[in-house]
Image 1 (cartoon, one colour):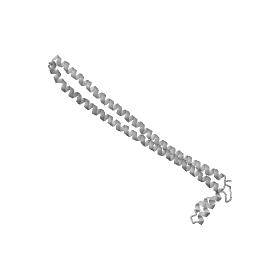
Image 2 (tube, rainbow, N blue to C red):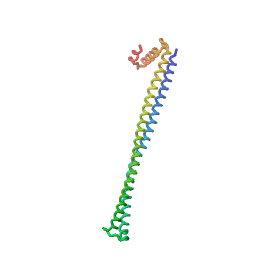
Image 3 (cartoon, helix red, strand yellow):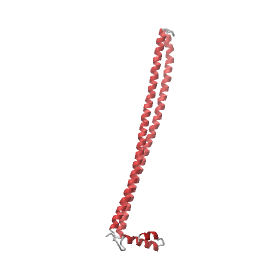
Image 4 (tube, rainbow, N blue to C red):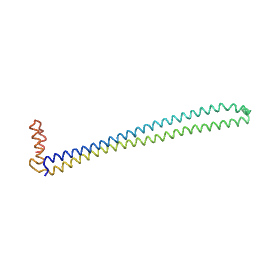
Length: 202
């Protein structure tokens, strides 16, 4: 048999244990939320880096284009004059072909600069997507952990109280029913009895 005092101690212990389980679940949820925020921060950084990579590529390509044009304009006329080439002759054709080839080569290099920037930006955006997905999964895992802890706490409390209740006397003032009736009578004498509760245990 389980005396009322031991029953009360058992209920108190079960409540403390359940509270601890709930707090542990909430702690896991809070940690998951913190980790998710860090992942989202890294994703934002990756997105910004992708934008900067594209801007840097555009800037590098523009600088290369201007530099090439400056070099061509500074070298073309002196080179033609030094060689004595006349526009329209065979030497002029050779000079123009060389100039066109240089322009085409420069254009390819400009495209390569833009391509490298675009490739880097794509990789960073892919990284950002992965980080955001990981953040969502981490946050969801924290919520599941908290929910599982709540269910486990309720189950543990109910089992402990039920086990202690089975050990109580089946009748008399020391029984579980008698304990609740005694509590109701004391509350009534204090002017705060709950008639619905006392009717429930009769």
